[in-house]
Image (tube, rainbow, N blue to C red; front, side):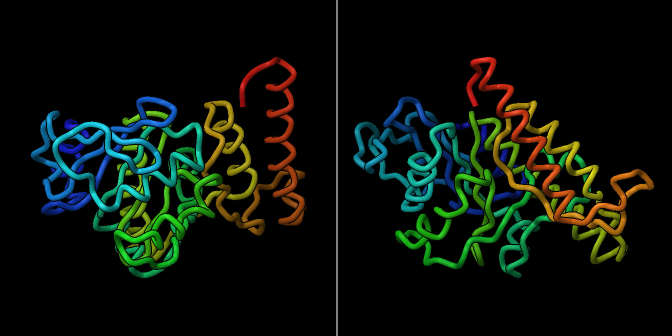
Amino acid sequence: MVEIGKRIYQKNFVAANDGNISVRVGPDTIWTTPTGVSKGYLTPDMMVKMRLDGTIIAGNRKPSSEVKMHLRVYRESEDTNAVVHAHPPMATSYAIAGIDLEKPVSPEAVVLLGRVPVAPYATPSTEEVPDSITPLIKEHHAVLLANHGALTWGRDLFEAYYRMESLEHYALMLTYSTNILNKANELNCNQISDLVEMRNKMGIKTGGVPPCNVEEQSSTPAASKSKEQVLQDIVEKVTKRVIEQLQKGGAL
């Protein structure tokens, strides 16, 4: 957690005492960063241990008031073991503008992030914030917080952090391509379908599917399909994969 704190501070994802980090260490237990401390100057003895009901069980400091977001993610997603909240400038600009990050402009964005929606505005440090992200937790693993920042989560601390890093990189690419170059060639539905299947094979079950442009399909038999048919193909491929896993006795 100390290392991740230094990374998000050095990358300008946070300023002053912004941001917070947490990691699950048991079914009902997490460690989280304290309030009022720059993420670039954390030390191990500053961390706070608490239960998912908010009870503090170890540490000499108070947790960030925004830990409520983290606790909600852990309660809603059993596979999540780490959460990172930061204010990366470019991604936060999209949050301020109320623009979802969902254009399929690169394979990495589709596989690692999928769609990143904007959660409705909520007053920081209140229960409004976790309430605003709750409908998005099960389907996604990254959200923009309207007029606030970004939240990412993952199966371990580095996956949660890397998603924050990828999120800012994705936002930067979109800004350059759509607002500076004024041209962005988006991936078509077939290409997205292949990437979703690849993502599924990597064990990534969430992220959502970016919208695709049927009109720019390649000159294959699939080019004549309607958007609904192509999306149905995506669903069928994912369903087939899930059924195969179940038949093999594997975990989803």
